[in-house]
Length: 457
Picture 1 (cartoon, rainbow, N blue to C red):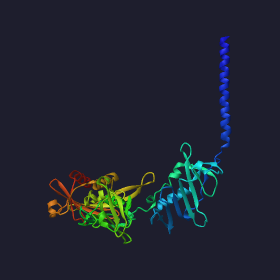
Picture 2: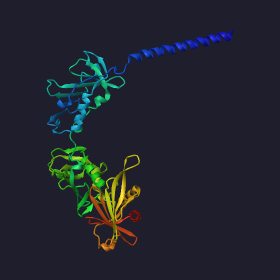
Picture 3: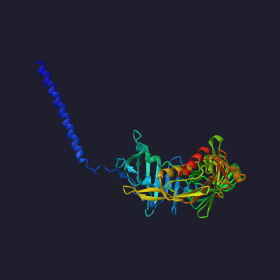
Picture 4: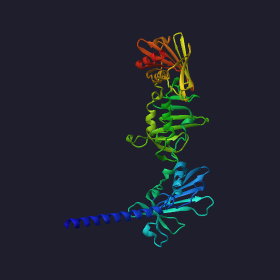
């Protein structure tokens, strides 16, 4: 009997569980059936804003300077609390944020008591004057909602109170300096044609060739490292002031700019120039900041010490520290002369068994023949990998370095033509590039590998 009662109880337990599961499944099916694709409730846009027609923006918050920006042709200016060019990308980002503001939830359609939402005295107001509209478009932000997950907000044109995500309000927490144009030089690295630096480490000048390579023109003619120069130009392109020391400086000596400690002069492809003058430290040495200005300007800025740290490395940091900069994909051909024998190599394209293009290297002189692509590319890789151990800028006679009778003369044809002669004196290898005043002392092990690789082709 007890066994029968236990069986009945288990039956009812199972039955009840099945009923619960069935009810839950029915509810889910009923709800999901209603939620068809594309029918989800969309959040309402707070402002309809054509960014291109905006021509004035105002940011106001209690206890802070009111910021006003006005459109000036295709650019923007900060007109209050000071007058200065504005950062166009920052203004565009802010206008984009305004155009995307969405109401998370409508709290009340109308209310006589805005104080309970912190909107009787808004914590921040953003307004935009739009071309063709009589009233500015504006949004006011109030207190945070319970849980600090949202902020109460409203527009002056509507009695409704709604919530927006907290990040929306903080995205408009901008100080005047945040919106001004902080670019000192307004230069793009690809536009620079010459670069001249003066400072305690010495003076030097570089010029870009038609093929995009860089070479020193002062104090001697010698090749520069493409990527090293590009890094310095990148620092100049991205240089931004961290603060304004003085808008209209009349006494430049106070900032070490009466006689600048460093000057960087750039000539651009359109013939215009930019000159950056760097003066004394701004603050303590630990802060690593400096006073600087664009030559001829009255504004003295504070810049980070990154650029100065690069300039302190001097000319040596920018020199080409490899024998040649060789990229196999750019190389169309090369010549190797050893004694009286000259070998000429050319790259072509052939079809593989599957009909796809593949690279084929050939020797065309003195006798024609196909070569293993990997073997040729390995030799070119070694040519680009030989490191300069020492720059001899005041060389003696060529015989001192075995360059009066070089063991190899190599010419590489790519976007431009580069040539180098390699000599050997005892166990040491030396080289000289075309139109280069310096003799290069090479890493002997890598130079030996290169000579063997070229001899085997």
